[in-house]
Image (cartoon, rainbow, N blue to C red; front, side, top):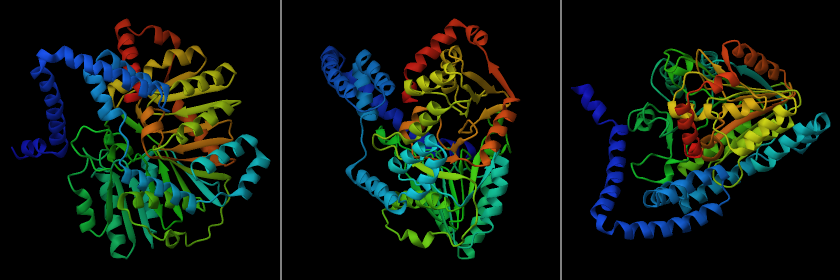
Length: 508
């Protein structure tokens, strides 16, 4: 009975009940005024036309527009209401002011690096163009003096992260989309508690929606009671609102400003295969040691400032070691979803369109807009060896169905698609021509590309690029290639369902 009551009064259950009650209230209003339904329908249709005009003239992705226009015009009573609640909402003025301060602080703390940019330009014009874009539109300069270590599995990231956390003497910053008590988090938490007693400044940011099923209510207070500074990004309220859309999907670990880790791996046991949630979990991270860690430090601190509203002196968090390292050129970057600049997508597109020999991609979701489809198809048709690895075991059945709906058109153009048969691949990596690579948190889906706070690391002329490529080739050995013959064998009804879901892909 205690377990039943605990589950019944879980925050997620109460939240779902509250949202369902609000939805039911809207339905009851329509039913109650059914005698006036045609009047409401006419009014809704008129408003729907105005909303459609508004959507068409927005500076958003065309696929996102279509996904909203269809329900607005087909079912105007509810489609229009849904758009007004979820589709057109903007952050409050105070939130926009805080985000503007965040962007201004990034620019101040991360000024351009013209000397390094010119070095890159002398080596490769395409790499310079990419670095120039990131520097100017994501306020993220290029660095030398940084060593890189590619971490091809969650288990390796876990081990290396614990080793580095044990060395902390000044501060530890952790920013994660998902944290869940278990082997991974409990061992990390033990280290954090010891470090707090040693006088280390330990701070944690977690996303409220990301952790709504994994952490108990007011877990941030529990951490603060342990001496760990903790804040929650965009606290979830059981209100039908577009505020649900923007989440902190980043995964950042910074130790003393000298070591930083980012990538796809959250702090939960499925990421280290302690238990198989969706089969074997394949994921990746990148460890930075040296000057480029400063960008990750600033990313964390500006997010901390965004949430708390407190203005700090960032200079006290600069690295205390001058690490002699030279492993190519590194450009850590962040993607802020407020505004018209899709940094994550543009970084990907720049790589896709500049590939000459090969383009190898891993992504858990393949829910892509026309620009990315065109870039991948054009590369393949031009003779580039384009290969994409996606999961075989889905974490969300409907999302996986949409991912598979893109296979046929890509394969027809020469793109090779592989599914990771042991389970779920959560890695977000791109490696191109042995010259460029990215490792980060950005999925090839609309949410990552347009709605979430994200981060990644662009790498040029580094030995670690060969490690990423070799890991991709080893992973291929555990994959099943999806051929055109297999696509054509998909039952008709299943193809229809996938096609229908694809219409609403931008909303998933």
